[in-house]
Image 1: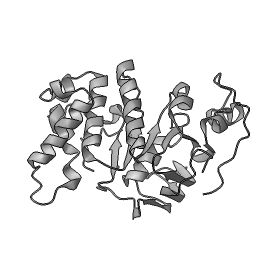
Image 2: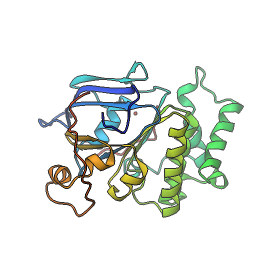
Image 3: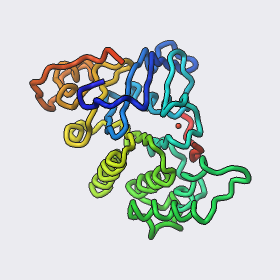
Image 4: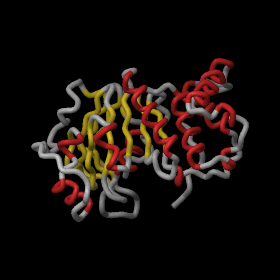
Length: 270
């Protein structure tokens, strides 16, 4: 853990290794990490570094070859109501016939029991979540008719309607407008201020220092974990990205890391 979090971790990964079928190289190798309540964590690293795989492992969408994950006292598994996951927009088949209101209501699915009909209270929570992301006026609009930023807001509404303690966002700032970016950061701050835990996979390194407490630099393994000042170091970034990056210079000693996905819309098959 980095100096940015002193609280006892509520999410732990211990020696996690993920190997996709047909591949010999692991997507993640021996990852050990702790996440504390109220903490904003950014996952950074180049394309193919394992950021998305790490989020999917937390949701229980990919099997572990080794290691274990504990979330709020439970092993990671699909359908955990306390874990809300927003995938990359490119992973979703936007032809799925559903409205914005229907997507938001899906956030309540993991809380329903047979016969799984949403109640009036569930519908009210979904509607309130759409209002929170300024999409209430688009409730009856088909998701395919929305802009990229609007689609991202609707998926955030689904996650908010779920009322989960752990929120996982995979590249939420990709292809969205500045107003949506600002709204996402506001929601992250609100969730963490209320005691929630938020993990964001992002390529937007310029925003990391201002908006996150902890940064995890990943390239199959964890290269470094700590505060933004500790991790956004030229030598560490060069190690992860395979060359120097013109970014920031933080003259702070680096502490190497040594310690210590509910029903979805159909995903595209790659």
